[in-house]
Image (spheres, rainbow, N blue to C red):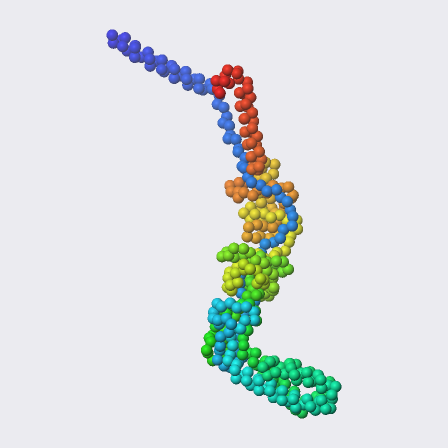
Length: 409
């Protein structure tokens, strides 16, 4: 019984051992197939067809709006300040010709009327002599005398055509009194301060009721009919500036854009910022223009044009002067000539030919010669494959017997 038990145990072990040896022998006889390298997958990129043309340089600058004509008001008369047609206070707007301030002129006006009276008396004394000696000239002088009134401006004195009439006028001090009256009339105008333009009051030094003296500072006003934008343009952009073009002005705080013209360009460079001041005049009749001095604005200045040039996005410029092109299904790195760099683009004048496909993606981890395909071609091939699969499925359905087609349906 024991021998039979041993035989029953050894037999299965021998079978397993023989099977293992046979498997090892067969494995050694099999030839190992070489490993296939993974198929390279072409990179899908966005491209732009190169078309050289005429490009205009873009110049951007920031500056503050200010009045082209700020005026400091100084008193040219002495007396008590009195109110005008608009309140004389900071922030008050006014129109051309409105009375801003006036100085008490009652005494000055009476002195002027007295001088006019002296002139009328002098003319009244000389008229009889002119009538007696020069009757042909008397009618003209008599008409002038009738126009003389104390409460109205003095009319211009006619010229003496006869030398003896001039001597008569001089003997009666008519000329001396006449010019004294004209001087007092001009002085009286200085007692009233009228607005020389449409503007606003930005500062007041004296108010109504105060006593003004000669040379006293009354305040400061701004001309809003003609506004000026002072821009700080980098000195490197100065050769590209076209001073005859139109300037487009925008604000981050207000909607819309406004137009202006370059009035003048500074001739000095700021040492700290390396910028040149450019003065742009804005038309005040633009209704939606925010006429506020000190407002920060952005201006797009007119730039000079470049012929036979290509605009390349700045992000697609690698190194100093290289770009990637898609050529014959592979990426090619090509050097180009960069004439000007701007905030978002570079102006390239050579190195690119018409019809070249410029890669506009931001490429990382690529090298020249890598397989690539344009996105347009990739989409076309994908659509073609989809159509082929649809046609195959339709053909399979048509090849099946009618019974199977009805069951599947």
